[in-house]
Amino acid sequence: MTNGAKSNEFKGFSGIVRALPAGVLRGGAGEAARKATSEYRRAEPFNALTNLGFLMAAAAIFVSQRRAGRTDKQLLVLALLTASVGIGSFLFHTLANRWSLADIVPIAVVIYSFFFVALTRLLRLSATVAGLLTATLLVLSPVLETVAKPLLGGSATYAPGLIATFGVAVAVPLTGRGSMPRLLVAAGTIFSAALVFRILDAPLCGSWSVGTHFIWHLLNAVALGLARGHTGRR
Image 1 (tube, one colour):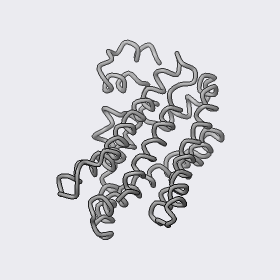
Image 2 (tube, one colour):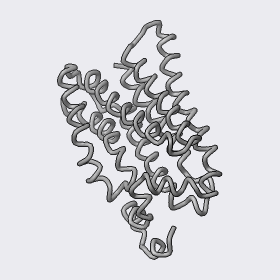
Image 3 (cartoon, rainbow, N blue to C red):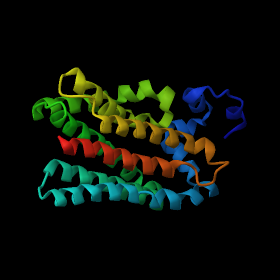
């Protein structure tokens, strides 16, 4: 962290975000610069290996389907997409910036795919309506990112994930589709905690060489597993 950043007063997450170097807030440039430091290189084995969490979450879907003796195509697609998150992130953390899109695109696809599935299964909307709402969330994502950036900084890109979990969870009882889905609320809560550790990775990497990015991976995988678990029940 720079001397100028150290002089900022930390007041909640907005204070932390304001104290971060500009490159970290922008995401790409800051990430590339940090990957050149020795501290970040020491963290990369943890960041790469913890992507196994996504593969385990995907495998759990396949195992549950096999035990149930049925094939749920939507859940199997989500399983494959979840596995792609782990594979893409692994490539990024081992092959650096040549695979930067592999770290971003898969999780975005998972978020919007899950949102669509949750709308059809939990809110019982038609595929057409669910598709339109999913497209709307995608179109509005830059606005959500702008609104969330003062709080989440470079992690504001993942703000739609909070809508896909908490938004749907709140909508279920409001629309008379049942009680509040606790697993989905838990998934959103854990996803929020995962974002906390993603945000703290940059300012803490100087004092803790392994950083906290690997915790983002682990908690994110758990959140995906819980979210999938509830949609699989309906």
